[in-house]
Image (tube, rainbow, N blue to C red; front, side, top):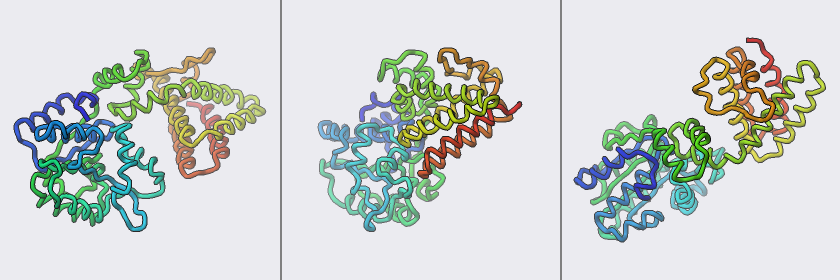
Length: 372
């Protein structure tokens, strides 16, 4: 990973480079922040810079995660009583090569482990002790990066503490965690904390311009929704093509919902609407739920006069956004969002999608007519 491939974080990049240049690198660093802010990309660029000072030719191997003195550890689930991350390294490498900003949720999805707890186990630490007892292949430093270090179980944490207190010679340890709530205080006290902030909106906009050719108004929308998270921004850009379809389906539901109050026979249209959506794969259904929730929130902001926060409106021909927004208010928004959240919960647990969407469509039709 090269520094210029990292979105924003210019001040932090400079600090990390200076610490290497001035030989002020602590033997144990703790990078804390959301994955989408760049915790792992920064750790990899930092590792490459350290190796570069020792062997510039060999340092380029970090870009493909095949430097023999760079060791990566990450949470997995046990198979046949084995909880070693090396069993899943090829999958992890593929994920990071495709997107170094990947999240724990992305990793869980790749492993198809939705119902399993991803953990760093004690036998992983035993394996690390063995690896770091060997001599360096390139003759310089050995670097350990532990991604999602806050997922160590108690046994692994206690074993790692001993490794941290007496690290092998010329070893640099970089821990990466979303937060430190579940980490041993004794581990925290022995690491140098590096807080990774969200990517600024200005830097996000610049990086999107470099990555894709997207209209300015769309970029503003992505920046607002991403909230400084480059992983989220990439997913928003990837899903851009589905917005038109989602908008059309949302508008169709709104129009049927308003008809139902006076003409109950329109209820069957909502049933057909739900059945069509239920044919999608689960991920697309969940994305549509997110879209619906966001449109209801924006309609609420529009209704209450916070138009500067309404970064997106529905512009389908004949759809009256301002008129629709007046029906979304404090008396029904909580119930609407709760129903959407419940639908997401049931889809996640493989409930019958036809029933979930039919139930949601009918319930939301009732809430939208609720008086302020």
